[in-house]
Length: 211
Image (tube, rainbow, N blue to C red):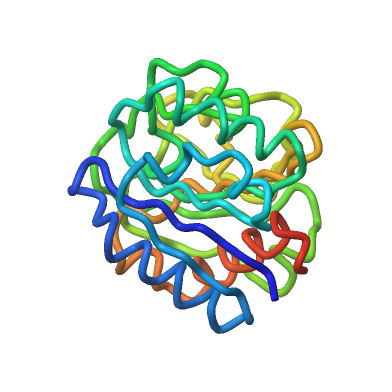
């Protein structure tokens, strides 16, 4: 049985408990043994982390101490999967550059606040997005700094910013660890949308080498 750790907390505006519950439930339905923690101290035990298949960070903003971050980085570099959504992964621990390198990106802004926009599947065909069509969402549209090494699985367009095409979903490697990220998930209602839940669940399974 695959083992996953879901750690949630940070800014409450992103509904960390509710979104963590959706990911916990989705992983459990896929046969994962899921542990949930509400403290970053869950990252201090490097040996325990290295015994996991997947770590899901769902902690918008906040600060992480060195004795919490270093075991996390080491575990993922060693081959443990890492994944998450929206600000819970992509806007966490803003001062920690190495964390951002691991994630493959960092939130910059969400122009216009909650706004309707389209998520375009591709350009890279992948089992994570197979069978999912382009879809519309009303939420925060994340403008991000992104690592050019990312394998981009879905994008969105910013019409007010010269039609910039911005990655929404990607996967990458960090050492031997598989990393998956999706910028959707501002609220539980967005994460619960069928195409979003499907894409995120598949991505987390991929990170855990359980696809």
